[in-house]
Amino acid sequence: MCGLLQKKWFIRLTKYWFLFPIIGFLLLVAGVFFGYGENSYIAVHDNMDLFLAQYQMLKNTGTFWKHGVDVPFLGGISRDNLPSELSLYSMLYMIFPTYVAYVLGIIGKILLGMFSFRLLAKELYPDRYMTYRPIIYMVGFAYGIIWFFPAFGFAFASIPLCVYLLIRIYREPKTGWYLALFAYPLVSYFSYHGIFILGYLVIAIIWISIRDRKIAKSLIGALFVLAAGYVVCEYRLFGQMLLSDEVTIRSTLVNPSLTLSQAAGEMIDVWEHGIFHADGVHEKVILPICLVYFVLQNLSYLFKKQWKKIFHDPFNFVMLFLVFNSVIYGLYDFEPLRTLVEALVPPLQGWQFNRTIFFNPFLWDCALFLLLIRLYDKGIFTLWVANGIICVAVLVVIVTPTRYNDLYTTCYNKLYEYHHGTEVDAYNYEQFYAVDLFEKIKEDIGYSGEWSVAYGLHPAVLEYNGIATLDGYLGFYSQQYKEDFRKVIAPALERVEASRIYYDDWGARAYLYSGTDDSVVSSAKTVYATDFDLYMDPEAFKALGGTYIFSRINVSNTDELGLEQLGVYTAEDGSCTVYVYQAE
Image 1 (tube, rainbow, N blue to C red):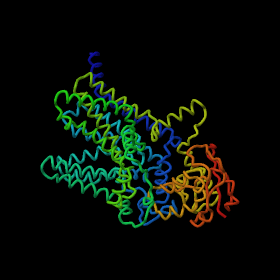
Image 2: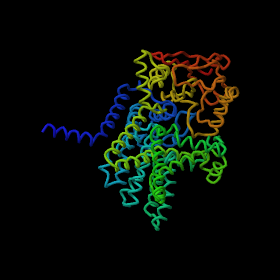
Image 3: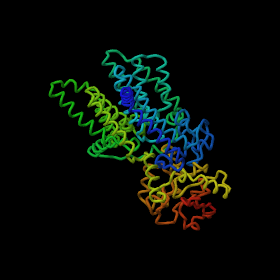
Image 4: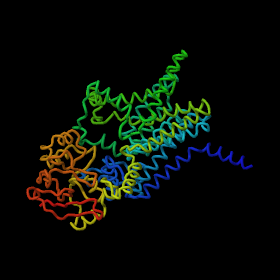
């Protein structure tokens, strides 16, 4: 009897083995980020210096749902330039404190990616679902835990959900499925994914109509329903793109101009390594395994004189799709083609149509899934080989220190601090925004909404703390304001050519620049500055309404600039010192 129970226990354990790493990882994520709280180490680039501060600013000003109002950064820009309120990710920030919303976003992204992949796989393999279930969950889990660009993690993770809904509509065009597709943009983002999904859908409609020898009416309906969903959920974005006559910084954006050979090199590089906003570290495990399988499988077709199977194998289609997206990425930097697209469709000027690359992490996991289920079909030995492969692929994603792998960064830094008895130089979440410090500063100087700038720190820190900024970081704002703010920083740009090119050719970061160093804006506790003079035009600063300068650098030429130092403030833990100046 005892042996029988052990056998049943072992069978149950092996049957549901995939739940252990999934549940264990989710508990680890929750334990680390909620256990350490705001002492966790969160990625700064395009994250804490951008969207987190904007969400907090919307909360501070109560403008999530308001219309016809400006928000207090970059001299005051329309609320419509910021993320839509009709987004599940945005709603997290409306409901929860910003840090809690961020962590819930990470957990939600994992669950969304995993269960979206499960829905898709079950739809494609209904008869074999129970057999493939472990690998379906694990591949979906591997996709969900990729450390995508955090603000758009839901949009990345939900791609398989969109494919699932489109397949359901094609097979069973019922009202409920159309309504679900209409609501899909709540977890997507038009500029990063939506416009490409619509483009891919047009191609699919043409191909399926030819294959079936009849018009794919259900998918044509899906095309209009999905487009309408994006317009509704992102009505602010569409209003700014289509109804506003304001000239934005996109009009002066200077993109790389590569030769065809250089563009080809970029295609290969991004196919192999991906891009940091969507770094699935596929080159470590998934790529080599899929590449070897691709070669062996297609050689097998040729040797067996089954060459037609090469063109019908879905694995080959996915691999071709990966190449296509990578080619588009490289061609974007080939100026003649980019100029042609902008000439044909002027509203797309400055739009990055090379974002097709954002779909490659999903496609790599699809390719791996197709390979693994074929191993499942061959027998018990290859089944456990497949399980081993996906476990290694998952482990690689977890332990690779990519830019947005906050779990790795937090655990590594905490272990370092425990072992060495001292904190790392990087700021944790609490230290970066220094809320208590800035509350003290605002109280002492009697701050009441005056326009300010940051020097040596990201303007996002001021925005997060309810301070109105003339500077800021945004990829879509008035060209006129860019030129007005340039007058403020002209003395610095004239001295450092790299900074001039960075601002004039891009301009999304309207910051105070150093007149000697490439950058003094630091996300670390140490500020590296070789010159303590501040190079700015004080008259241009006052012309924009500027009053305060919050600096991590003790400015040495205050008399020359007509600045009065109001005080020096240091955080209780000594992690940050801020010098406060007022224009006289």
